[in-house]
Length: 147
Picture 1 (cartoon, rainbow, N blue to C red):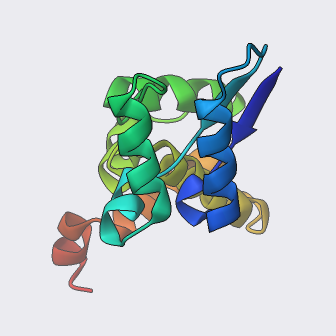
Picture 2: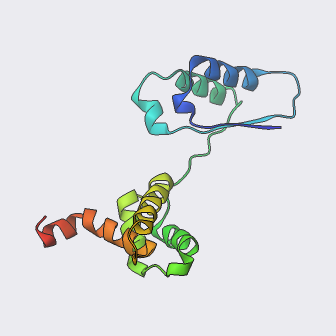
């Protein structure tokens, strides 16, 4: 069995206790526990998961798999699949990568917000809406347009 616990940075003490208990069990079990959390949110406070994570790693009971930010090429590949019917311009990947910092959640949200805006504006494609939103919020555009 695989137990996935997402957003452990928002977890309460009971959830952290459950993670610690499952990791420390000596009895054989066909169980994998996968937990996700945002490292930045864990560093900001005195979250109980911080101490449990350190202890479990010290005893070889857990392993951390840090996720990397997306490259501009990965953003372009995602756009090619997500907006395939609209043929997004090549510069769109650069703009979205710059605006999202390569964070997958921010990238997807930026694209989805732009797509929902384009759906409410007849004649505007999702790719065009993404490009317009990215350009309008970029510092170079603001300087050039005087806004």
